[in-house]
Image (tube, rainbow, N blue to C red; front, top):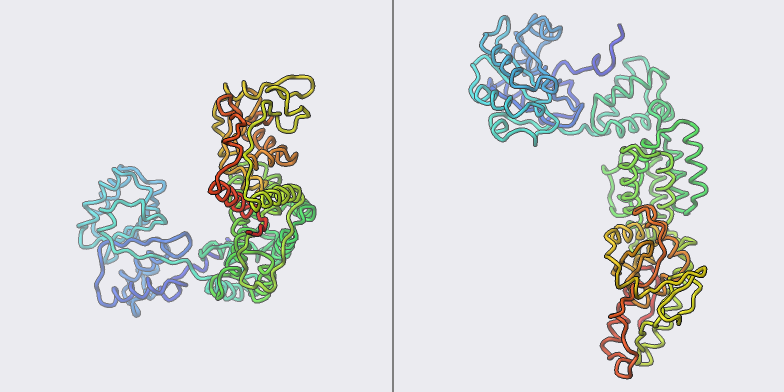
Length: 560
């Protein structure tokens, strides 16, 4: 019967263990000097060698002819432990034997001395799964076991163990195996198995394994089942990845803000049965590399990639600012979580890529500013920015004149986007229906979802969000009344901004609303001569606020 690679090539001695010299050297020294502890705790992520080292230690401590702390693997004890014919080494899975009764059965076995070996070794895997009662039952024996008993506890989550257990064990933390170490080991095994693995494919498997040798061997095993000559394309086809070619193309379309090209790429990948969650994960890894290249001068050791891939990514990084790369990563991470919860994966991927195309650049520069490509605003934002520029130019002229006339609310304020006249005695009309805005405002209630609406607006329309960030909203039936300044009211008259807010409200609250200004009767001021003009300090404060809003929206304003 065929034996899978991770079992066939499981290390037999400490010298065979890859990437854990800080653990294996210490254990060998303890064995050589006969300073053997009664309880050990092996911690680390999956596939890093915890259980393997526990079994090697069990052989070494009982071996009849040890060699520099390693088991000889030839004596009857070593062979018996390897083929499980000697019962003095017991392995227990705490994930399925986690109750107090299971620990009591284990403690009952401890009473018996070894039948053939020198020590009885109890390996408890996934020990963090034990119940509180089971830990309590184990505690006393773990502290003072019989002289012939050694406990080895293994876990991926040491923080879940009680402090009383941790304090009674010698702890060894297993590190993730480095990508290059995984690649070298995989190439050696592939050659021994009559195949070949190139460097690019080896590093790709190392990235997928995330520091776990067992996962890497499983992927290699599957890839060699497809072809004895394993390259990057073989690995991509084996695990359902899009591959570096597609990922680079997607990144280029994102840099050019080309949603149409992105939709065609997603359609091709979907038709080829590529997993959208896997694609999202690949994009997260790619834009992590872009973020590092944009912000770190010396990125050696931080990015796992071949020389050709690294060169391509450096060229791609010149088209992104650090702020945009970080925002893209945030959007992809959020989308990945949504996909994991079971939403339509293709639609979610298409949606996030369109949103990414609208992510604005920041004033921050990339690591290679001379090669940076200036990004153009999206079509949705162009009309808003033009409106902001016109408004700011008017305000600058007024401020320079030294007088800034205050605006008072007209007796009748129309619903935003309606065709009614502003002087309709408190009523706004559309389609023959009359709406009294003041009456609506007087009886309106605070709209509790407004902060969520603003958060969504920040992604959909950054300039509008910058102006409305400090606003409040009130609800009265199907009318959503927004309390904001004159600048904000002008912004809300823009058809695209108004439609964006209505769509977001519909998605979050399920309300098909109409928008209007929040204008309660008590807030209307008389247009008297004493409040016709504001003080100079008010002029300056208001001008500074306008400039701040414009800068947040990405509009350059000259200070005069």
